Every structure is written in C-alpha cells, then in structure tokens.
Image (cartoon, rainbow, N blue to C red; front, side, top):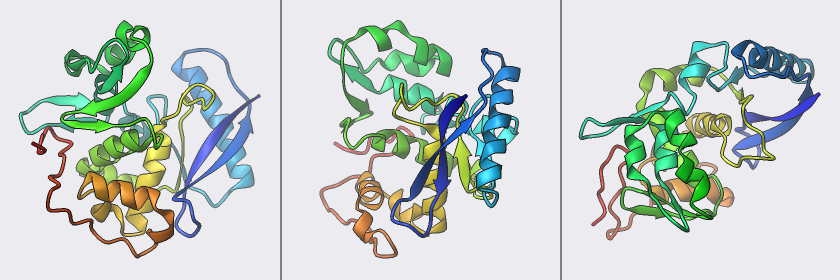
Length: 243
C-alpha cells in the first residue's frame, strides 16, 4: 500500500487547494504500465470515498493526453526572443546554490537533462531562485513554482480551456516525503483562481500573485490590483522588465 495526496480545487473554504491523503495499492516498477496501474488504483479509491470529484492525473504517466501535456516536463514557455523551454527546465535553471547557479545553460537542455544535471545535486545548499532579474526566496514554499507553472498554463490557451473541466488532481510521481513542489497542486490552484475570477488579477504582476495567493483573509472577492509606480512587471516570457 501507498499513500499520496489528492489536490482538490476549492472555491468555498479558506484554502484554495484542499489536500486529502489517499491510500491505494502500489505497483512497483518504473515502466509506464506499472505507474498507470498505481494511478488506476489511486483513482479508484478516490472515487469510492469522493465520487463527486472529476480527477485528472497530471504527469507524463497519465492515461489522458491532457494530463501528459500538463506535466511540467512538457508544458512549454515561449519567450519573446523565440526561445522555448519547459516549466521544469526553467525551474531547474533558476536555482542558486552555495557553490553555483543559476546554471543558464540548462535552458538549452531537455527537461530530463536539466533535472538530472549533476550540478543540481552537487552544488551545496539551495539558497534562492533567480528567474531573469527577479530573485525569489525559498519561503513562502512553492510560491515561485506555482507562479511559473500557472503563468505557463495561462499562456497555453487550449490546455487552460480543457483543465477547468476537472476539480481534483493527482501526480503519481510526487512524494511529499521527498519533494515540496507539485504540478498537480499548481493546477488545482490555477482552477480555483479561475473559478473565483481572481486569475487575471493575480497574473498582472508578481506582487498581485503573492497578495492573492497568500493573503487568505482578503482573497474572497476583495482583491484589488496592486498599484506601485516603482514596480515594473516581470514577464515570464523573457521580459526582463525590471531595471
């Protein structure tokens, strides 16, 4: 048996994303077939206890094309200077460690190559993220990853249109004992922001995103755009708009 989190898009309670841990039969092995057996067992147990949910597996092992396309390994960012890289590549390339980084050459690598680059494991303690000219601290946890992923999803209009049909998400590859950031959680957050009509306000600037996502007490239909004359929006698509 295994236990993994289910991320539920939440419109009515205090959290944007509700997390429920689900136990299911685990099928060991690295093949796609074995992973999909585990996903099937995972989703079967979800349906038994939470039959009202429409669940999507978000990973390269998903049995749905949408779920595969939404994997951070496959979700692409197209920059203004015609560069293209995945969310996963951007995330790995933004890491700054005690003894190196950000490793900008990773933008030329595939998702797998970027994640497996030995410098990611051998450069000491992770200190912060640097995406273009903006520095992101490690706290609040997942804020940078969520911002990066949600911006990329918003720009992929067809995927964004399809994903709002679902209200719960899993990622068979995500183990909360080993990792912090999760693409399934980011998708659930995206859907919640969309359904609450907060998405476009949140994505107007990093300041807005931080305020909408973190300030729980003001988020329900009370969020207004942050107006700061000294702030120039950071563009996910390579717009290094801060000077």
